[in-house]
Image (cartoon, rainbow, N blue to C red; front, side):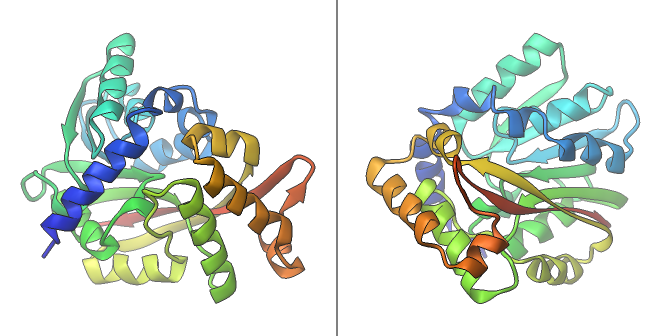
Length: 258
């Protein structure tokens, strides 16, 4: 069962974090474009009129990339301000986009309600990843696809702890970015067959990364100190650079079939 008290707390925390900065995600290049976005649309291979659930839609970029091909999109997010931005963007583009405020571990939809589910750059906020993946599988019709993208922790314990601490300092609504091995297990346990795994990396320039989240100064200072003091193995793992300060997040695109 989902911890309702914790879920409600997470919704409040998400609102506190993202309401003041929602508009920044409308123009964020990594969210609005990103080479993985076109790849998700390609791998889902949806026909016009198909019905897609975009979990963690934020300001709607992922769902609207599908809507451009005539797909009917339901965008789900915990943060009302993000959904308001998504509605505005959809209206500008004349897209069919239904915005729903809820959370991934308790999807308010019937079994088999969708032809596909997309989930991009949000699973590290989930309170219960296995539960959320089971819910994604539940709302898919038989034979339908889940296209999933997020940053992941390396399999090494020290690197896992490092990147999760770094992400939490930058954004306190961050819960945890799991490892790929964990996602593979959770997909299998949920009854989803993985037929595509595509790792990639994205460079985060510190100034832009912290500014987008409006990270509190004391948290930013600690995160920058972590990057500066990282030992060589971590510097190599995350391609940490000092001029300008930047590092790489490890990403993965996964396609699962119900």
